[in-house]
Each structure stands twice: as C-alpha cells, then as structure tokens.
Image (tube, rainbow, N blue to C red; front, side, top):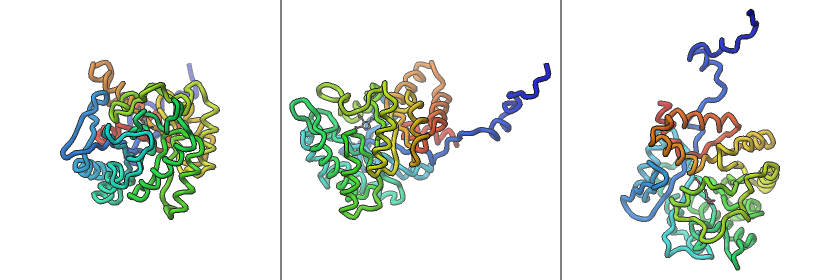
Length: 324
Ligand code: PBG
C-alpha cells in the first residue's frame, strides 16, 4: 500500500489538530440567557435546569459583573412575572417600573458596557401562557403585534440595546422597527427569533418562568418542525422588515436549518440551544451516562460549525470556564 494521501497525518497529535481546526469556541460567541425574579437575595434553582437560577435584581448585579469579568459581554433577559400581574392585555409587559424594565436598568448601572437584549413575547405576562392576546381560544395576530411593539419601546426606553421578539406573530418586526425609528431609538437593534419551531424542547424554560400554555399548544404561530423551506421564508421576511440578526431555535435538532439559513442570508445568524437541550445533557451527566464537559463542547462546536455566529446557551459560563 502506498497511498499518496493519508488523512491521518493531520490528526497525529494535538499540535497539528489545533493548527488545522476550523471551528473554535470563544467567549465572544455567547449570548447568556438570564432569568430575573422579584425579591432580594433570591437565587432559585430551576428544577428541570440543574445549576441554573432565577435571580433577584441585587444578585443579577453580581452575576453580570462576573460574566463581564469572564469575557461574556451579552445577555438575553427574561422576567418571571407573578401570577397576580398576568392578564390577557399585557399591562405588566409595558409597565415602565416592571421587573424587566428594572432589570435592564440594573444591568446598565452595574455594567454599562454589557450588551442587553430582551425577550419580547407575551407568554410570561399572559394569563393563558400564550405569546399573544387570546380571543375565543385563538391567538389574535394584529392586536398582539401592537402590544409587542409597545413592549419593545418600553424595553428600549429602559435602556435595552436589542429587543428580541420571540413570539412568531406575523408582521411584528416591521411594526417594531418603525416604532423604534419613530421614537428616536434608531440604534436599538432587533434580533428576530425567525425560524422558531413549535418544540417540545422548551419544557424546562416554561418551568423556569411558569409560562406553559394554559390550553392547547403553540402550533398556530411557532413553526412545524417538519418544515425547512418556511425557515428561509421567515428569515428573509424578517430581514426585509428590519431585523439586524436572525435566529434559528432550537439548536441541535435544527442544524440543517442553521446551515441552510446561513447560506441564504447575509446578516448574523444566532442559534438558541434551548432549555431542553441543556436539561438532557445535565440529566445524562448526573446519571454518569455521558461526559458533561465533552458533550457540551461537542454540541457547542457543532452549532458553530453549522453556521451559528452567535450562540444563546445556558452552558455559556460552563464552557468559558472550561476554555480557561
Ligand atoms: C418565549 C420564549 C420561549 C423560549 C424563549 N422565549 C418559550 C416558548 O416559546 O414557549 C424558550 C427558550 C428555552 O427553551 O430555553 N416565547
């Protein structure tokens, strides 16, 4: 045997492997999701998300300083809304003194350079646990867009750098962009959850925010996971409507979509490695069935290799600690 090409030459040792490695995870890749809750000194572990916590604002302050020191410079905020403030109108969602609005200010005070993105959706505020206003069991599109637009303005007013609509109502990006322009928030960006699938992997997140739908499911607005072409259509439309960044969500089961979207568009593509993906790794590792750190890095690298320019991940801190 005299093969001219031996692929194993480039795998001989770590030095050559690292020299030819195509995809490298760095702290710059991450967007860190944070859950905030009312109270003082509150740090609640989310039962289905081991080692992930809801934090009250005083502890949030400490957390973002720690993230910044680790080189993690962007966060994605979610607020846990008390049951008595939920309704079908989104009143609390646009409250200038609401938890989300205070959380934005807290972060900007504690760590002014931290990039603050906010989740814009109705579900944590909705007595029905849906991403829009409910009428006769139906999630109404256009009235919901109005509230999402007001919500975005309210986040911008509180100091958010980016709003991230995750609701999947039609036409919301255009409406939000126009409103931001009209009100002078020309530098506030939009990261659109564009190809967001109706996924069973969001379960632990809905525990985290107590936001599970009270009836039915989200299949009339989130995408059917059997579909691929729709993802291109959704992302292209969001870009036309003014999105600065588009997102594919969830991550691992959707890497074909990530690659397809990456090849089609010319804006940054974010991928959300969602709560269920985190929970699976933690659960298997707890049982001793998988090597936590190895699986985590393999998954994150695969997401980036597929074309993600930004990774929203609950593993951000774990991964950066491992990178050293
Ligand atoms: C809100 C929202 C959800 C997630 C992000 N924003 C839940 C949902 O749409 O039901 C899920 C994130 C995760 O599972 O980590 N619309």
